[in-house]
Length: 546
Ligand SMILES: Cc1cc2nc3c(=O)[nH]c(=O)nc-3n(C[C@H](O)[C@H](O)[C@H](O)COP(=O)(O)OP(=O)(O)OC[C@H]3O[C@@H](n4cnc5c(N)ncnc54)[C@H](O)[C@@H]3O)c2cc1C
Image 1: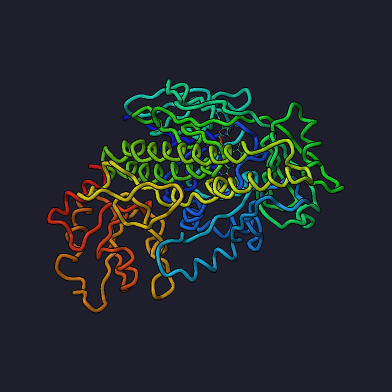
Image 2: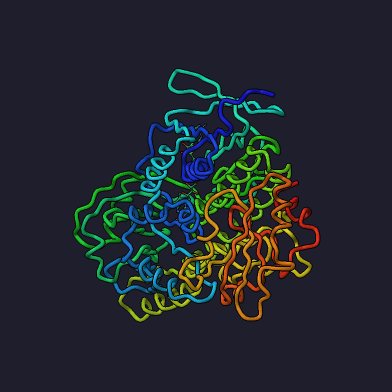
């Protein structure tokens, strides 16, 4: 056997690489995270962690830290369509603040809402926070200012070439994960292509500091102000409420100064901190790795238009799917199908989310196509143009803001780790979330009678959990087919950690629809039933990838 220096090398400390390092670190897996930049940069990119990503952060004990660094919890998440932020909006779509959303979640009695609401936090705030978390984990080595210059994969290991300044070095790892962004040198070195539509539109994005704007916007506080113009202009509130980004199709960086002044339409002092072009893409990688010891995650394998916020959020899903499978394989109990299932499970979600982003951005293009030059005129014709655009936007803009089905309702179809059922599973739907325990789905959030959440009862470790509902009228107790011992022995046969969790809660049982639900370490359902299967060994073999 080749001796390895570290079990896992992760290239790229964007949000996806950082999350993967943290998830591995929390599972006690030694890994090295290398990033070519000297430090996280103060550059704008994403700003909304969706509800699923916040559930993931909660499991890692990070949700409240992220909220404390992000947009204050009382700030509304409203979306406006405007001609400027001082004119009456053409359309105002209200969305709850985190405080309001938490109240709705606390009062929920079904499984329709997530355990955590979304959180607006600018990527330039999130990355340093995640970096400090990763650096505090004893099993994680974080090396900024270190570029991966190449790698060589053998049957037993991956040798990764690194360069720090003029100093070249080599690290041998069991696995290499490229979280190296849209230009992914690792994807290119593997000869993996991207399919879809590239270079759909080039915009400029600039970051501004404008201390007084947020408090002074007369039409209401919100997160997005889409300007109904022919330049795709959009103003985005950043987490401090003193910083804003503006996207627009203009000719020069200097035009972005004029554009910001026009949109805010108030004589407020502001500074443009930086400005750069970016391109819209809808692309999916043909493969998610070498098929051996090299994997790809995040923007390296899917590039979406930020419409709908499915870029980083999809990458976070990749990271948590891969982390426990790497941990299980390195611990020796993961079967050969475990790591192979990463591409099967996550590429279908990448494909689905590229489609969701296409759906949402087509909606946005549709209402933007209603723009006419008279839109700002105080004439009957101008009013008619504004009203017609608003009517279309009231349907089409919602596609960007309300894709809860894409965020929460994804499930893994055709995975070798998931027990298929005879009946077809629920349909994938971008806009509606229909809670389900159909195998492959994310375990829906349900409150128990004692005020705890089922998701919290499972915890964040590499353990399979059998949820057993019992102890109320009509239920026969934990005996008979619901005795978990046989399944426990089957998992033990593979050396895989397993625990049964007894939940005495009739309502939760009704919501979940089954007495027994087997979930895996990433909280996706493996199997469900009302009695254990005859062949528990087969179920444990399936769940562990044997
Ligand atoms: C304007 C805009 C708005 C967005 N809004 C949202 C949003 O609201 N929600 C959302 O989910 N997503 C959003 N996104 C998308 C989001 O920013 C990306 O999906 C996210 O950054 C991808 O994270 P990543 O870690 O995969 O890659 P990246 O963030 O690109 O990180 C890759 C890292 O790899 C490093 N790297 C590359 N090559 C090497 C090498 N050879 N050696 C060492 N290091 C290397 C790079 O320096 C980089 O730091 C937005 C994007 C844009 C442009």
